[in-house]
Length: 113
Image (cartoon, rainbow, N blue to C red):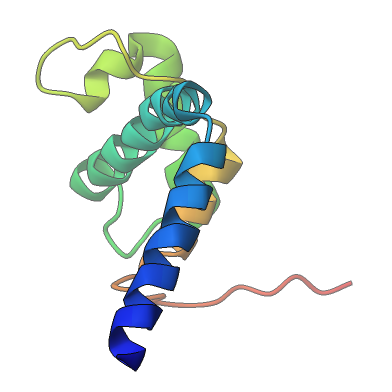
């Protein structure tokens, strides 16, 4: 009996939550951010293929990727032109690389003040 009451209460709570969600607004948010995150993910793969070799620093890698994108466009990130990718900032690419669990830092350079 307790399980049934718990299930009914849970379903009522879910029903209330779903009626309060603006579905079209939520869909718009996902449509707008999808292009940016797709471009960042593709840029991570592009950087791995072309620039990440254990010899370049992170700023050098970011600069090289952004120069390639500036000169050749976002379509260099994909095997075929897509036309639906959003331009990102180098800091956003660096943040995504920072969250990569398989990232291994070879060395560390510290600036002395």
